[in-house]
Amino acid sequence: MDLSHLVTEQRNQRTMHLDQMSVEAFAQAMNAEDQRVPQQLQTILPQIAQAIKLITASFKQQGRLFYIGAGTSGRLGVLDAAECVPTFGTDPEMVQGLIAGGQKAMTMAVEGAEDRPALGEADLRTHQLQAQDAVVGISASGRTPYVIGGLDYAKSVGATTISIACTDQAAISAHAQLALEAPMGPEILTGSTRLKAGTAQKLILNMLSTGAMVGLGKVYKNLMVDVKPTNAKLVARSKRIIQQATGCSAEAAAKAFAAADQNVKLAIVMLLTDLPQAEANQRLQQADGFIGQAIKEE
Image (cartoon, rainbow, N blue to C red; front, side, top):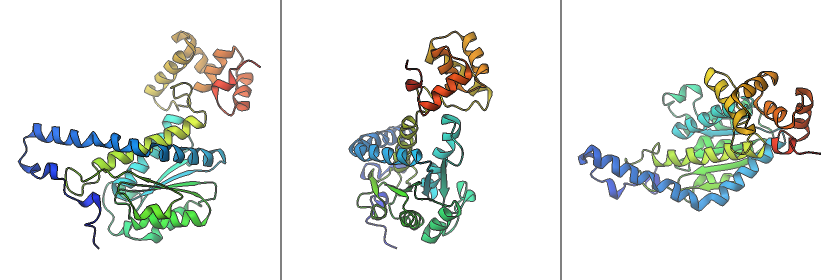
């Protein structure tokens, strides 16, 4: 297998003497390389915006979002999916991360798993992929067979397909409805795509999931109003969000939080409309969960 043409495998001319650098020089060099990531992503923001729209459309059809990848790429997808549950109060089924080799691959390499396209298809079949779902294939090198197999299967069932690669003219781009190519140049440590490439992937995933959740009404102004209060920290955050959204006192926020059965969004609408729980909830339902619409006077 010849990988020499891939930018992710090239040697970085700025760090040819990495092993001889002082710790301070190393930190400066790595920081300088990392600063290239957001600059490069700026060139594909229109495509990222289109990806957000496609994912949002899938959600509005009751579809799900699947991230598929291997190694670091797969782990980043699993991480982003897991964070949607506490941040946006989503059902765990709504956003899912699939990694070549399964759960075991989160902490150790599973030999050969990423090299088999059939495994990408099999994992999506296991989750009963439907046409209304969206699949985002993630591959730093842009050639991972597991991801290509998954994207091809997704396309065959009519699902939305999006690819993320950190090379240009990536192989996986031809297998997706929308291709996001973000070449980051050679890594500071040759071939270690958990570095700039991983950072780029994480930033893109942040935008995809957060942007789609904004489009579903899970954000009011810049507040995470669908946060799930699963621990003491998130309970405290929930009450603070209610205060920030309504300008009420801490005592009033706590009272509304309890009256709304710990539903932050509902508590906010109750306070801003001065309506009891049932009527405020009806307003929210009619507004498809958008607080801004729910609080407008009829």
